[in-house]
Amino acid sequence: MTDLTLLLDRRLMRARKDAVPRQRRLYELLRKAILEGRLLAGSALPASRTLAQDLGLARNSVIHAYEQLAAEGYVQTSRQGTIVAALPSRPSPSMNDGPEEALANVALSARVQSFNRRRTAEQDLLPFMPGIPALDAFPIRAWRRLLQAAWSDPDPALLSYRPSLGEPELRQAIATYVRTARGVVCQADQVIVTGGTQDSLDLCAQALADPGQRVWIEHPGYGGARVAMQAAGLRVVPVPVDEQGLAPAAGLWRRQPPRLIYTTPSHQYPLGSVMPLARRLALIEQAKTVGAWILEDDYDSEFRHDGPPLAAMQGLVPQAPVIYLGTFSKSMFPALRLGFMVVPAALLDRLQGVLGDMVRRGQSAEQIALAAFINEGRFTQHLRKMRPLYAQRQSALRDALVRHWPWPGEVLGGACGLHLALTLPDDLPDLQAAEAALKKGLSPRPLSAYGMGGEPRNGLVIGYANTPAEQMDARVRQLVRAISAGLAR
Image (cartoon, rainbow, N blue to C red; front, top):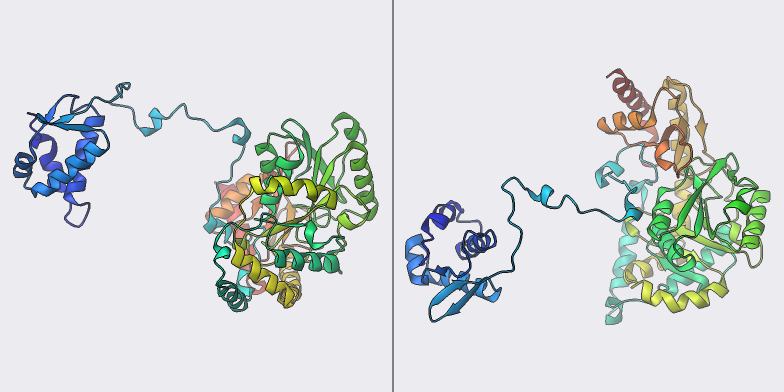
């Protein structure tokens, strides 16, 4: 009979009374001893009454621990008592092997090896973080009322998986809005509700291209697009961006014809350039020639500061091979996680047959509330309120940079959106500048982080939407001090 008092007694007595129950603690210690080989197969455990007396436990505690071990196959019970079962042989662990060493050979897939988003949700809320709207200005009470109204529907079907294309009332509301506000040519049945732009890109990459096919992506550009395309096994081709947006060299169409083209023509992310009409039309015609789909991400188009929003590329030419992507993360709030695609009618017929297998749509209450938010005019009202607010905050940022920024550089963008790009001299690496800022509670992004594989640009992407205008001067001075201190080290 195995004597367990030395193995168990002291460790059991160290367990706090308000911590794990004693019977659970006994089970865990016995299980660990069996797995580590300190209780060998064939060893007989003491009778429950004996072990209870030795450890000062209630007999029922020992019985429950033995029963749990037997149920999981660690011990076997017979007339001879409780016997440690024989487990499959395993390599003996080294005394020096910890969890890290034991899993040293585990690796992620090659497709995701280059993904490297290490920022936290808390850092995303710091001043100067790009892409974060003025969350404190959102009409939360009106939204809460609409959300509560949506949940008041007693239909239990709302708790099940929802239509893969989205709630019909939201699809209709989106179609009405983009037709009038963005010049998109569509009917409600061409709208597909998604979990945001990233979800839309994932669906497009998987449904419209096969592994190994090429996708053109703006360089510098949106890292989420690269992530979606690489995760789908596509070959990313970085295409330079100039002051008029995506600028493919003439020979690139012949040398590396794409299957997909990702672009942000209304407000290039992150440089802020706007693609003129002639280049948009040329891009559409070339895409038709090579059989490519254009993924038009209408990033930040709602917040144009120097005039009315530009019409979307999607509505410029009949039967254009353009899929229009929109999101409510910037116009409302990121946690909503709702976006949409507008697809050509011919493509919709084919997508309907596969979306049911690719997605299991939810968020029915949020979708219904969003439809009401749009239909009641609250969405348009909110945008009208935010445009002058963001214009004011951008102006305050520009003024503060003029007053306090000591390094040579150029401010890029600003026609619309929630951020500015600021170039830096070569002797001031943007990664070092951004790291120094983050240590002081500021969160601009390094421009080089937006590289898609070509020559990186050196600069900072500074979000202004989440910083009040009256704080901008102090924040820029704080940023300059942080970078200067970082350089001095």
